[in-house]
Length: 327
Image (cartoon, rainbow, N blue to C red; front, side, top):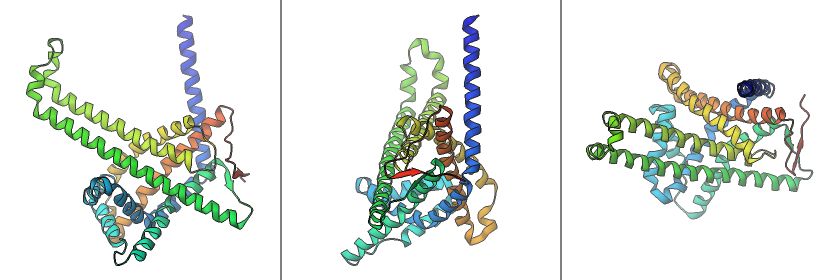
């Protein structure tokens, strides 16, 4: 009996803690006006997304070829946003290409694209600082310029990290396709060489393999998305976060992001936004998707803050930042 009493008490304490943290997350989410921040990020993404995609395609294209990467990028966009929106983004990217007439025009174009693309991460950085109650206020103009350069470099770092994760995603997809093809081509041989004690699985080998590969793809998606979110929480804000807390918030955000893909996919499939808004329909869909996705990222940050406070700890500012007294 003592064992079951302890087990019951642990389960009860777990649900009490979960309720307290979730409740604090919701309260912080409403008090920090995260909905308005997400609207600003969605608006800024309209101008930054083509530049960001050009940089990703250009950098990753060195390894796999620009045409192949373009196909991968637009395939992913089609899964998230639909074919019409992906086509609009593809046309915008082609229209925003850099000049190839002379070297200085090309250099200026690349610098401009980098400046515009990093704007997305600066908006995210400001939003996370608001959530964690931090503010950066250098006393001199010269330091403000240096800080702006540092922030831009941090944003460029996030772009490079995003490119690296995209490369990993391509490699994993290639491996899964190879494994799927191998199993499909050699299913008869696999069944014939199945151990006797596992022969009852023979009729189900194709379906079980499909479920296993689907599970691996889901796990890889959560790991890649969670890794990117964890790096955002760790690098961008002016708050000191341990890797453990950053990963915890990233896990929450990535799981919500996966569920959000299903919800948004169903919503966009059932609601005729593009036909309702005409030529602006693709833009509206992109705004909705970025706005919805940003909320999940910010919920992960609110979860980190709620969990830290539940543990009786505080989130310390980095050396160049200080606390902000919220009204």
